[in-house]
Length: 340
Image (cartoon, helix red, strand yellow):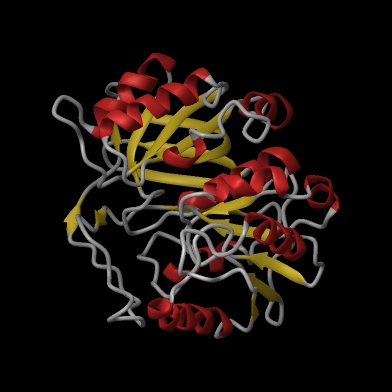
């Protein structure tokens, strides 16, 4: 694994939208997010692929060229998009993968549709990426026990850090950035802990972390852009900790997508599976937890659900490629990551 250099005040952070851009009504929130980063002493540059009037910010070739340019510019130390979207998949064949492999590592941060970019980046280049709160979420203060991407990108290779969930989350809904662009406190109104789905007993598992959003990674699993078995052989001989999270698809769709990911080898080498908490609906005969068990219960490894690694606030950032240590007991939930 290769880890980008830790960010220091004065470093430059790029903003581009590989998938959805930001429309005029949300620009105020983007400005607040940029000021939050600048307050840490960083310089922020905003690319040209940011238009929010359509489903993507620019034609695919333009988005791929801008992202490649930022990631190969030695003056840019991190790239953080505003958020995800729907079709970042169209960038994959257009990115200059040889140039990305040859470049000095750059932190790339995001989740949701950004899984389509950051997970292949780690799998194909060996560079760690951060699955975590994106640019528009950046103003939120992390609850005690959790970190933000701004904390993680300052860490040097070899650093070990542990995150402990607050055991509270937001049951439904989102803050309206159009009417409250400066909101910076999470509404955590519902108690909830991690839960083992596959049986009883304590879980202690270790492995190299890889994963992301079910709805987007299910479309690239088994392709050259998401060859997890090859990654496991090369970088994780002791096994993986695979994490997945569903953004909004119902339980029937998620069940089918997880089955497809399993058949494509996405869970090959997993010592345990972490499943993000979701507000996505069930179906008449299937809950989201049942969907996970239907697809993954036969793996024979611990499955820990309701982890804060998805679309439900708050957010527990996970570094793709880091070594992980998962603990789930009746009185202790924690994920330790080592950048090594």
